[in-house]
Length: 166
Image (cartoon, rainbow, N blue to C red; front, side, top):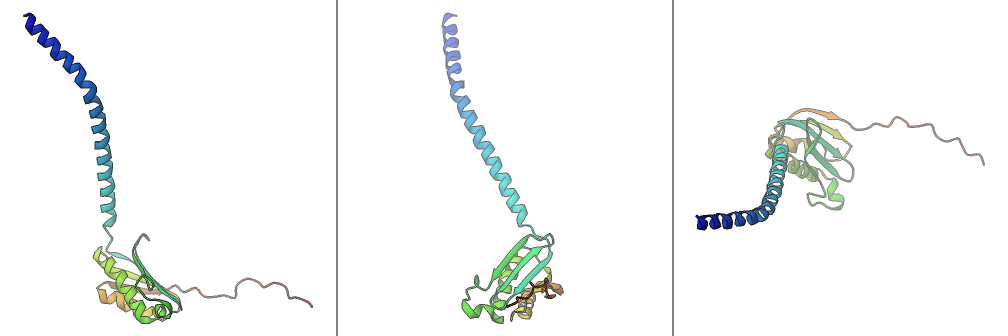
């Protein structure tokens, strides 16, 4: 009997020492599990952001020096964008119709790959690449529902300063 008591006491002494180590390990394990869960939740949020509505808005800004195309979902969150400089054009070549075609195709391909199949086009500016950008979006396979011109028009502005007398 006495041997069994001493064995039980030795086992209980070992058990008392083990929980101190395992407590620290449990805390570390809990922290890493919480960090992994947070990372998984963050990854799930990122994956849910990738899902795109099938209809959206394509904004084309064709200035005399550059052409910018950004395609957004119905809420206004930008899905893809491109500009002449991003496409590799420099200087006066950025303002050409060909550059606008390449820019619009680049942005439209990215949006199409993410699930965009129908857009409403809103154009702004008087640059050379207005119509060619719309044709490029259509050529990728995105259906254009309507084309709206949002170019700001001058209305003679504010009242000028009083005339200078010499």
